[in-house]
Length: 57
Image (cartoon, rainbow, N blue to C red; front, side, top):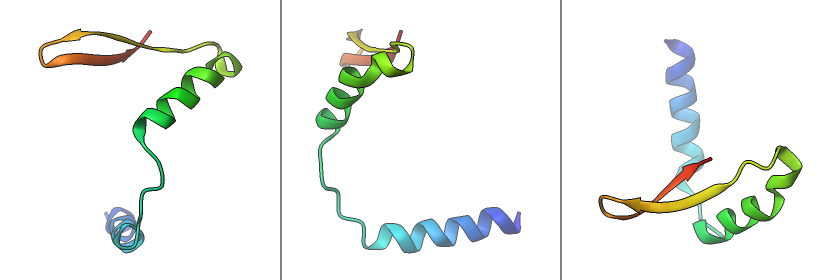
C-alpha cells in the first residue's frame, strides 16, 4: 500500500507541470506506421454506439 501511495505522489508531482506536445492522431499514425516491427498489430476503426470506435485486431 505504501508503494502505491508513493507512486501516486510521484505521478501527481510530475503531472503538475506536464505540457502535452503532440496529438493523439500523431501517436496513432506513428503506431500504424511502425506496427510491422512488432508483429503487425494494428488499429482499425469500426462503428460504435457514439460514432467511431478504436480496437486492436
